[in-house]
Amino acid sequence: MFLGSFLIGLREGLEAALIVGILIAYLIRRDRRDVLPRLWWGVAAAITLSAALGAAFTFGSYTLSFEAQEMVGGLMSLLAVAMVTWMVFWMMATGHRIKAELETGADKALAVGTGAAIAWIAFVSVGREGLETTLMLWGWALQPEALLGALAGITAAVVLGYLAYRGLAKISYATFFQWTGAFLIVVAAGILAYGIHDLQEAALLPGPFSGHPITPTDLRTGEVLTGFTDGPFWMASFPFGWAFDVSATVDPSGALAALAKGTIGLTPQMSWLEVIAWITYLAVVLPKFLRRVREQRRARRTPTHKPTPVETAPAPAGRAA
Image 1 (cartoon, rainbow, N blue to C red):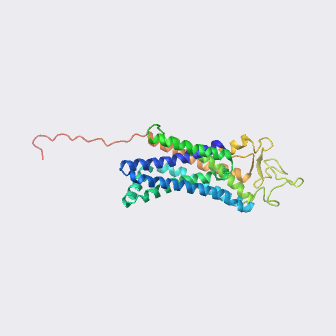
Image 2: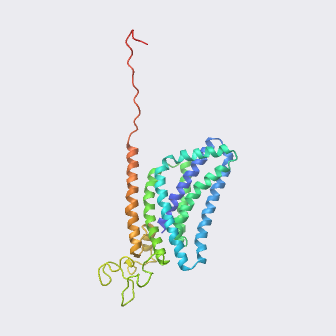
Image 3: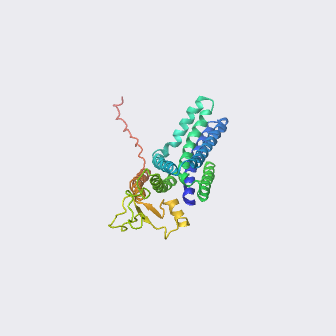
């Protein structure tokens, strides 16, 4: 759990630090240090809003019924998966021109004259990273090790961003975003599985909590069927029973279960729909991501061809124009 939230905080924090660093460097280069306080106001407002949203999502749900809490949790998880997936591919497609786009936006903002638009650019850019972080970490919000990991990751990102801005550290952002992008896709698959689990508990999706006749159960014991061979025939538990249950071997509250849940998104007991969603997401999204990574690496290795100047032969004597 700590490692997963640490890497999420590091990735999102470094993106925000990169954006702030580009804006600061540009304003200093334009000799507009007078606008810097407004930029920091925009950053502070984005951080405050992200923290407030996280608190509202976490503590506001306590006033709801259990089913409503699970429904909100499930829908928020699906939203988080959509945002993370979009963000990972958007960063791959636009990361190389983000500096130019930010500077163009800053140019237009400075043209307004007040500098308030700079605060807005900082607010939107940093707030987007904060919202993504809030949604991804929302399911772990009440677990101290997850919060500690996220704070440690964000702190490390701020330090790295500052060192890179001062020229004291060289970061290969392309390599960093490729590795962390692959990790975020695996995390998103786990968040998707959690979301399916929550929606099954909220009775929005059929599953082990639906009861008879939807849930496949042992008629003698009343227990939900599990795995391939449990029940009167092979795969009787499919698709609304448990896919596997190793909670007798792996303690659901132990360190191993927490590590698996915080990194690859698997828990000791998962339903068939959870497993199908986890596998399908990874089978569709991860190969597409890796294909984009290979294309970008090939593009970087391909030398840029510059036009060769054409030498004009001297005109023969007597034929000069």
